[in-house]
Length: 157
View 1 (cartoon, one colour):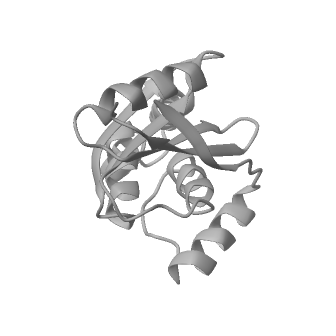
View 2 (spheres, helix red, strand yellow):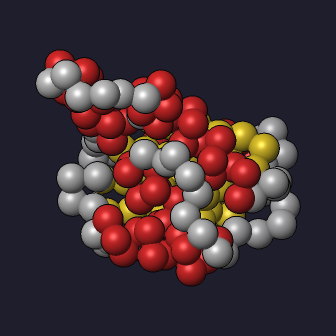
């Protein structure tokens, strides 16, 4: 059964997210998309424990909006870089975040709406059966510049 042990609600403008990353990491990681920067800045507000951790990253349209931004640039004739498309991929976001916490052993990204937190809690309970001790779950809304995070502690029984 999962229980909430930490919760963080964050709103960042673009400069604020980068300032948070610079303060926490010493520098802003290179070549991150805006959605990934927002996600990472919010997640860093949670103290992640040492045991096996799962990571659930959710959004209504975050990765979709990033991809559409790259495609709009192409349609507008703007020069595009290969990593522009890569920045829009949720797997890149998850790998950047997992690199910050080596104890993360399981990750997923989901497009969801109002039921995200309930689904995240149910998935966390399922992961507890596989040895995950806590789950870091975040809802990132790039339009509202929100990055809200919960740390669930898990009990495998």
